Picture: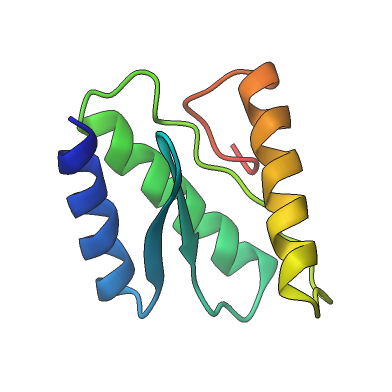
Length: 98
């Protein structure tokens, strides 16, 4: 199942000029250049729906920081890691926007 999800995420990222990679264990990171927070929320919601459709009840929480102004890549990784732990404790199978 993990390979199926990885393949779907890779294809989704490619269709939207993004980048997908395995981050750790059962976690993935996806990067997209979006102009607005609304655009990012739209992609996040589509990703959540896509993973739900793949019937993976425990990998369907895709979340991450949507703040602008991140200059240092280490800050991005730190914030993404914190958001991941918040997401896991808040529940799964939804985006921050939904």
